[in-house]
Every structure is written in structure tokens, then in C-alpha cells.
Length: 272
Image (cartoon, rainbow, N blue to C red; front, side, top):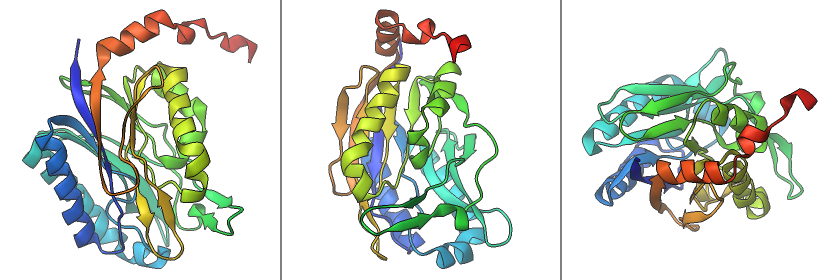
């Protein structure tokens, strides 16, 4: 059975793409040196700033972000997830796109975030992602990563919609990627709980790269990039500073847990 190391990279991305790419490469290199073969960057890894600047940069940034992912995957011989970057999607709109790239530089899968974060939080912050982001129209993919496992994609706010992860589990995902820029206010109560729930109910690994710290404009993210096993055990936690959460993924372990707790086989969807 396949066993390998996965790494969830934690960043404090800024409105300066060049700085973001440089810091991201440092962490990708560290992950590769530690032996990680499957590596994830968080949502907004290439840019995190105000909407007007993001819309202005999107045409060039989309091309640069994809080129960066392809170059990094080849250079460090890892399968690399870019957890979310802006792609032009019409007048004053972008998509929020996650992209998985194989170690040969081949694009294995893309996913445009379908659940958008439109929320008024009790701490006074208001978020209207739909004001400048177009929701994706396609269900997230599950892709076979040669020699490793089957990976399902999602982004941040998706984690609150369990039916999406049941779809990914039903399509055979061994690992659920959940890159995020989770707010500090909601993250302290919900982040780890939601990730553990998605792992347990689908008997899959969860790899969740996250943003951390202060990003300007009162935006503060929670951090705590996590790797969680199919029993819900937290295998690695990056804490609240930029860095890595690295832990083993064992497909055989997942299969044993599924055999011991076969809840997916016990579903009775006709009753719901």
C-alpha cells in the first residue's frame, strides 16, 4: 500500500505577488527537503489584498501563478496544489481557482470555488466574496496522482458544505485538499472541528494549507494548517506562524479504517 509524506504550507500572503512567490518557494523547498511528495499552498497564495488591486492584477497574475506552480512542481519534484488564485472571469469578476500540478509540470486538475463567502460576522467584519468573484459551475474533481493516491479538491468556505465532500469521497478520494484563508474570528471555534468532521465522516485524509496572521484592512486569518487522518486524528499542526504541517499519508491505513467503520456503505440515501 502507498505511504508518503504530505505537507500543508502556511503563509501570510500580501498584496505583493513577487514577495508571495518568493516566500512560497522557500516553504516548498523546505517541504521537499523534508521528503514531502504532495504539497499544498493555501488559498490566496499569490495575492491577498484589496479587491480593486486584485481585479487589476488578475490578467497577468493568473498566468504568473500558473507558471509558478508548474516551475515549482518540476524544480522540487513534488505534486503541488496552488490553493487559490484569481483568474479573470468577466467584467470586474474573477474566479478563485485551485490547481493541482504533477511533478512533471502537467496540470492534473483545476477547480473554481463554488461556495462564496458572503457573511456578516459578530466582530464587525463583513465579507462579500460574490461582489468580485464568480462562483464555479462544476463540481470539484477527484484526480489520480500517479504513484501516490486519489486527491479531491475544494477551497475554504466549501468546508461548511458536507455534501461536497461526500461527492469527493464517493468518487474515490483518499485525500481531501482544503486550502483556506479562514478568518481568525470563525477559525478559533470552527476550523479544526470542521476539518476533523470532514475526515471522519468520509474516512479520508484531510490536508488543509492555510493563511495566518494580519493581511491589512483588518483582515486576520487563523493559521493552524493541518494534516488529519481518516480517524480524525490531527497528525500535524503548523500553529500560527508561517511554516509547514508535514505528516504521513498511508492509503492502506485509510482502507483499514474504512473496513473497520464502513459508514459510507451503510448510507440509505433513498430515505433523505
